[in-house]
Length: 314
Image 1 (cartoon, rainbow, N blue to C red):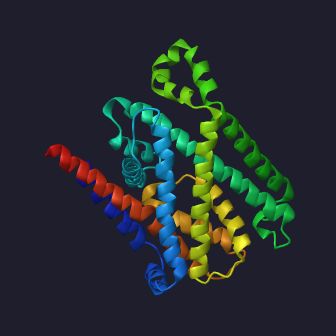
Image 2 (tube, rainbow, N blue to C red; image 1 turned 30 degrees about the vertical axis):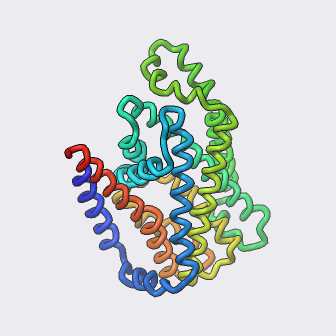
Image 3 (tube, rainbow, N blue to C red; image 1 turned 45 degrees about the vertical axis):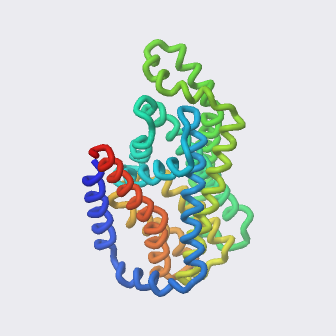
């Protein structure tokens, strides 16, 4: 599994980068920014980003077994490697369980889902904030939310808010959902594997949600800083709002690890082109964030999975 995953991942990364237009120029632009303190701050924030995710995963898994921070971090990186090869990152769940004890692996998948729901919930909340702020409170050009007719614009915003509230209610009532499922005989086998979710109280769920929020702020800040490094002249507060909308789009859009890079770059340019003409800078920033936040952790994770295989064989 380890060697095959590493080979497939390497081929996938090569194809995505090689097939991308202007990648040579954008890569040169990234290399020329090595002297920028903001670029080094973005790299440091990568460690903060995945460190927060490791703490969150550690808090979730402690309901099943003892889990050190270092082991949790390796588990998160392993999930990153597998998720690059699956649609909408569903492979993350399977990757993380490599570091879970055999008897707890299926239960751990439900915990990984809870962590993902908390991150999705924050993304949707902040995306709604970005849409509403630009539409109703910003004195800046509202073109990002006035592309659609006013009726459909209102429908879109209402739909986003409605889905976010439903997801929030679902997240805070996980224990109630498990207890309801226990009353259905046909679902007893499923309940056996997700019963651990009934152990979470609202305080713990809010704690997980808070970590997801802090992590969200970190990777949005990374993107804003990298756009500034690439000389994309957009006011910081406006860029932050635009990035909340970008991540909302990426959360709901169907993507596949093999082709995520062009989708990310295209989506970011579709949003940012309304406020800047620096397409090269936007593309370079998208490539840089993809490499820093996704590729580096995925490569580390594939090497960790490879090391697990080697140790087991020994």
